[in-house]
Image (tube, rainbow, N blue to C red; front, side, top):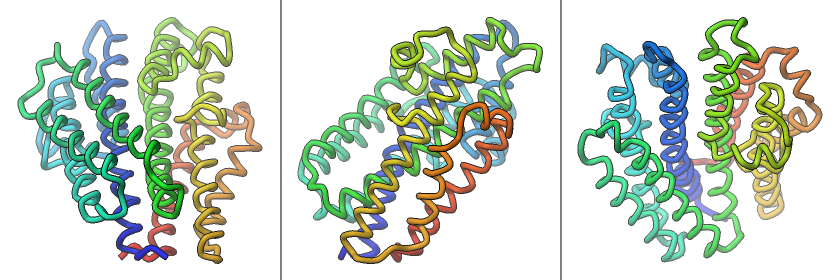
Length: 313
């Protein structure tokens, strides 16, 4: 059985690697959504910071929500523990702590990715360079993921790592959806408009789901279909359903490996069951914001229960 401290290091190493990519995707979403505005885009950027859960910290350092201030804060500000630079630093520290549990290829890709991202974000970002930098961050984290999946033994080390990745990814997808529908839509009168459709398309592009959405639905951009894709479609790798299927599977492997089930297993199965039986109509009838708020709360509670049940200390 893994020591709790090792399991903790693996879990958080993967959460922070995923967080680095997700933060880049969140800034990408802000960049795309801001382009839908002909006037001031500060509301869009404020919503991105709120989605990252960092509004209070941001206001302590900046007075305006602009592409420059928000991208600097979320990507390269070392005083922001959720920034890409801070997240990669924490991921590498956790990786170094559990170095003997990783393959050489995995560790080297983490170390190389950390160095590359530090170089990319060493200086203030010129707005013209921002798209290329966001692509670079996503590319480095993809290389880490590829090394990990291509070389790691499928044992409890793999399972704790997977759980960390998908708990973090589920949180991010839920937050991106919430930003779009609850915060960014100017008013009910905009629903179904060209602006509304463009914003939804931008959200799909920010989670690399633009082309695959057309494969599945062969239809125009509709809020109900896009929400269905990102919440309930079990084949879409960033959907809530896909994340929880993988979380539940990894937790079940751990239960089989250690011969004991915990409260975190029941909570994960409960969330997965809700995602399996829900229709997108039920979600909209409940209220998308309310559904997502409940989901984010349950996802956060699951992370806490996993830490407690497997003694992450």
